[in-house]
Length: 52
Length: 372
Ligand code: SF4
Ligand code: SF4
Image (cartoon, rainbow over all chains, first blue to last red):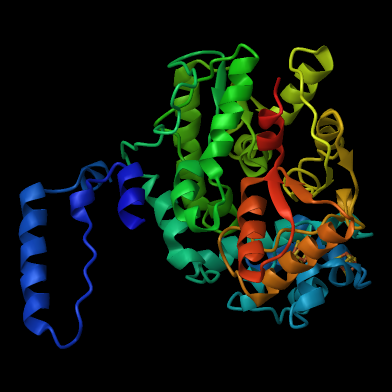
């Protein structure tokens, strides 16, 4: 649902990611955070920021 | 920023007679005994009210109290002004739906390019023209309230179908923003003004002279609040109901039979706040075979649908909604007709949670389904 709403707002859906990670999965959490940071860096600054 | 004492002067709230008619009439006070408009006023008059008081956010701003007040005190307006103060000091109501709707309208104050016209399908619209159809928040509601089948976007398709059947191809803009109604009533005047400015600009650029609404909140906000902040708008807000009653009276639109008993719920923004009571009833009765039965609390005495501005939805809201749906059932009607997208959402939420045996239908969906 959040992805769909972001889409209607015209924000790139790749900027949103929902993952479920349990407290026992520290390594997985770190991996996901790094991966998502890379992804956002690749997308560059959001238009929202430029327009604000 | 005005202090409470100043607000009292501005709104003539010191004329209060302490009669208690407001509290006696208030749907919230009936269910939740800690809430009392009379007491809020009294505390303000004695200088012991505090902007941190949570009760400021429990009012539905439904105007049931103010239409009955012998001293003509506009309590919802007083509350709105108090919220302006409270909000500027960092207080707010409890946001429903995790603040999703508040986030959406805040983001809409920025220079975003939305994708909100996906629903149009084979409906006919124009880039520029005399008539603008103000869709409102429905593309978003459609996603958020899908689980309770609140069918918001179908309703917009039906309005477009009605306009097209009358030979109108309205402007539907991908740049439209929330009208700002909820930000305004939540005390966030700044956001309200930003949203309103963008909407006015977009409508002016479309060349429209008339802006058609079916959401009573949008209509009221454009009719009464935009001019207060921005003066003459250069276009006229028109409610679809006036347009429809005219077309049906002229014979330009004809309706097919619907042999059902229905009852009608007056939304507070359409009835008490905009003064539109008869047209929806005439419209319902223009469907051949239909029987309209009134609920005991109708017209000026209609009860609010239980929450407003996406704040403070509680078991008090649910109690109000369940009472209202039971009242509708007790008339013997199979269907409750409403004319506000939010009444629709709130009643459907209560119906799904409590498994109540009554259909809830939007007035314009009903008309559109019975267009010949
Ligand atoms: S109904 Fe009006 S006069 Fe009476 S207590 Fe309420 S605000 Fe005061
Ligand atoms: S506006 Fe409605 S909810 Fe608020 S105090 Fe008046 S009657 Fe109660």
